[in-house]
Length: 421
Image (cartoon, rainbow, N blue to C red):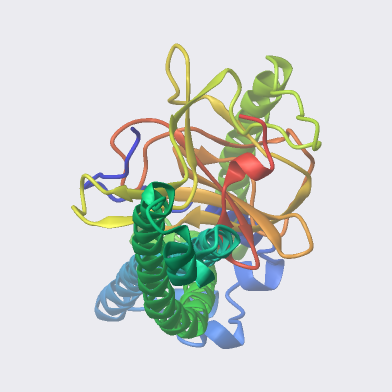
């Protein structure tokens, strides 16, 4: 059984790198010269740096100011990431509460239907026995005894048999009554559970929206730190250098730092692309009859969809997906999209750690959890069988595996309904 537990937080969201690359690529010459965007009115300009060199006291003040701004950028980026993780945790808990409530409501409805079917069956059997009793002469039993005189052995035998028959029909009616009462009680519970679902669904949707917004803010904060941090560090270097720098030298320094950052991000992207290409070439899972494929090659199902006792939380709750492991080790193995769609979530997601959610249209989505790293970003179109992540054990997980979910309008369904595992 692959359950979810860990005490470590994931590293910063891997899809932040896309935002960093974009920010680094759009640093214009005006910004390099210190022309301040509206969102950063307090940042020093190159003219401020030149003026600060006029005296040691003003230079030291400007150095402290720039150092403070750099520290503030780092602090804001860290705080934004922590808020994004907090909101992701809140969404994860809200989604788990909704999933468990959906399963409970479905179970109560199923149990209600079964109790009513049992009641109908008991009534049917009792009716059949009464029909047999009537056909055997039960309605004229006293008259038959009088007419029969001494030849009453057969009738007495019939009387005993019919008495037992009456007891049996009574027991059947009593069981039918009990089953009807059970069905009514379960039905009432099912109505209450159903009424709770909408509120829990809205809470989960609101938590998801907040998590997405927090993640966007964290990406923006990291992008700001990357883009403006380059400028500030070059300004700081110009102030602390023994030799005064010209505007041209300053701009060259900023540009070189920007290109170095772009090269680093490009190298990381190329490495991820190469790993994904190699994984795809190594043999992705073939599609099932429905056209869907397993997200993990050479998989073995280690845990099924359904209610279970969580060994970490120590409570009964719904396991909303199927857990998959690969022979020979799962960590680092490629995770494939089960079908074509659009990525609607890619990043830290509470108990699921680094996860990816793909929308396939018509309210149908798939979720891939506990990954060590991601290969896609939100808004990206992916094909069926495309490498979207690499398996891991992030979030609440006891070992490397792929947690795979299928949902319809947000409600969990058994992935076996879609993929032939």
